[in-house]
Length: 332
Image (cartoon, rainbow, N blue to C red; front, top):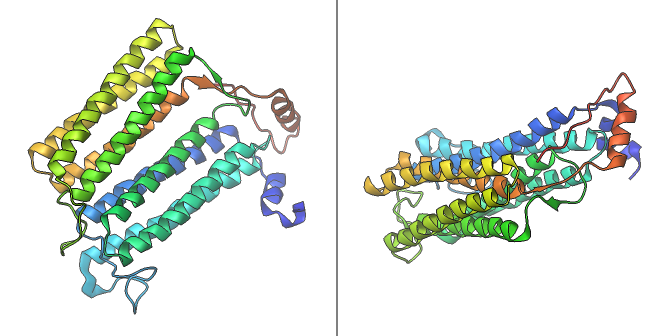
């Protein structure tokens, strides 16, 4: 496609966002991904899952909720509208990634991946409503949101490093231990989703189909994986100390441990108090923080250097007073 037909190329010719602006745009997508998870939890915990009876409109006769639908319709419709806000934020991230000099195609691709995940999840959310909150689809809806959060975290990290090939900062066995931690944490989230699908918070006051398993038994499995993740976290910290890994990497593990302990306290409180909606909501927010912390640990154990040609291109652009981009420094 020629530049005359490519709006992104035209924007890049007229605007050069600073590396810091690109990083902040990517961070905004991560924040919005967390917001979507939390507001989706509010929909379920307030029994507003069917506040809008159909999709894509709220009712067969109205695009927006009616007064007769009450607060449940407002909550469900507000969550739908936040999808547009999320798309706008992702759009800004895509534009800034395309407009920066040098152009980082990897960042642009990560932005577009987020956009299409959101589109797919929006359609899945509509199917969830049309199927009366099928618990398996509700769980898939949450897991797709977790995938969106994953891509957002990776994009945020990549904005603060170069576009060169990744190289490990630790020996291979330690790197493998970090991936075991990521895998165990992923399974932990999936099991937590199953607990939600079998538990008492169905998402609507009417009778809603639930996953036919004892939620108390699956909760025990969830707790077992919490201990596994904690054990892997502690083991990774000792391994990083043994190999004298960079300080930022060890700091990320300590941050993860702190988040896990806080999430564990919330988990025990919600179980002991018979799953009050407010505490469950905090637990969902905590699950996002745990996943972000886990990903940051894995990403801190490798680096991507800046390519010489990228630095030269940025330096050439810096010579033009109207643009003045700054050349970022490499970070872990």
